[in-house]
Image (cartoon, rainbow, N blue to C red; front, side, top):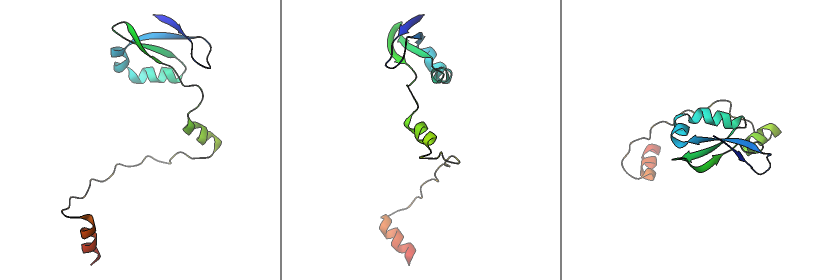
Length: 99
């Protein structure tokens, strides 16, 4: 089913109804479609509950990268090492290590 949706700053757009179960099962596919400009009305038991539409314009992050204000990380951060198991107060442990 298709419905017409009017969003701020947009002309009329066609919005496709999608059930929440189907949306959850194919979330990545729907998000890719939204990035390409498609809109969806999410339904639960046939009743509309939310509308998923692309944002107008670039995100702040994308804008800052395009302007050269910031640079994306060269590589992803690695996972943190597991915490050290210790007994006692941290300041006491540091004092012991300094001796």
